[in-house]
Image (cartoon, rainbow, N blue to C red; front, side, top):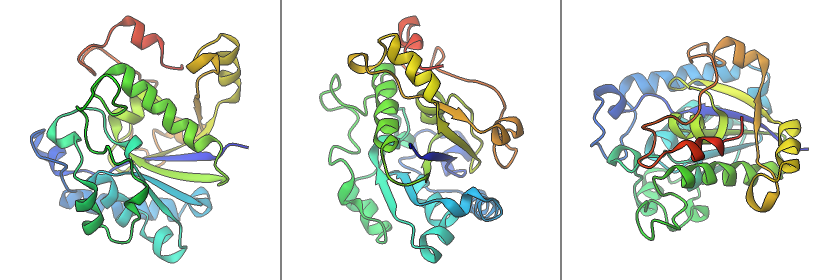
Length: 251
């Protein structure tokens, strides 16, 4: 049975404060650090928070910090493994959405194992057409499917993922996430079967899709801070976005 996913957006970072996209791989703000503490309390007070068996985190600085602070009790008290993953990084190729070298992150977060991170990270430009991290609509949609496929067959029953608002919205969950808020999803078997029957996805194998738990959907995130509703790719998300790309996203 595929795992339940607890999807978390990183806490407020410095580029969020100033709307300054020129900041390279920015750290959390002071408010962001406080939001992480609130995230930790929210998870501690939930049943599913105590059921997390694996933490997957974007290899960017703000997500790693969010995991370090907001999920500290799971990591240090319960010994939950943390898996940094280039696949869950943010979409754009602006400095704020481009990661730092793996060696730099390994020094800043010595308790995490970065040996599993794709060595191509954080490059978003080399061999653009074939780079899975390229800033194109097709690449982002494909990356979302790759991320969901990688977790689908894992043995853990509940997996927490710390990622980014843009990537979670357009390629994974079609929901908006406020800083440090979280939502819970199961894989949507019915939609996945329909997708496969229609010959969609890679080689007609269907597309991975998620269904949010009623509790977090109706509440606007577990902490009630996120906008309610269904949101997907829109004009302006990517340089070359067109109508055909918007049709590729599982509804």
